[in-house]
Image 1 (cartoon, rainbow, N blue to C red):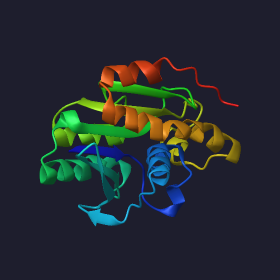
Image 2 (cartoon, rainbow, N blue to C red):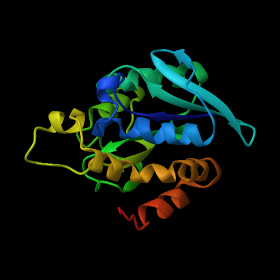
Image 3 (spheres, one colour):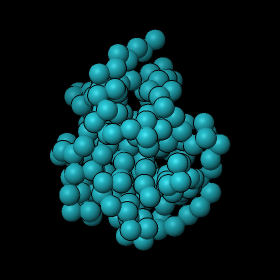
Length: 191
């Protein structure tokens, strides 16, 4: 069993913010697979499907970003999911907007959602897909990540969502090193 958890903040007011890049990415995958987040448990919206005889859970925690690790931990405990079978999808200030970066492990880089995951699962060793939102050092970090974005910036940020189906299915079928090599070396074009 695998858990694919996307990070974001619940509620309409946060839909088109930088911090909700993870939610938008997983929504694109769910749409491509004709899946609906129609179940709720442990303060998380989720859906399940089988891929090559393995149960896959797609999760969108419905606690705020800085508490999302609590929801992920509850799912991991209930379904007895190992950290090796956890993939987290989130926004990343240190990655250029419209780019993806995949990692096995690492620090939270100041990302409160990742910090909370690390605190709850007691490790920083879990797979992640980081969606670039760039960084505007002239703006307050919190205002920047939860502030509204222009339509043009949102389109640029969401340009990576076209890779959602392929990336997640690569993750489900390939060695993660190969998936990282493929997407970390990709030329991203932001037309």
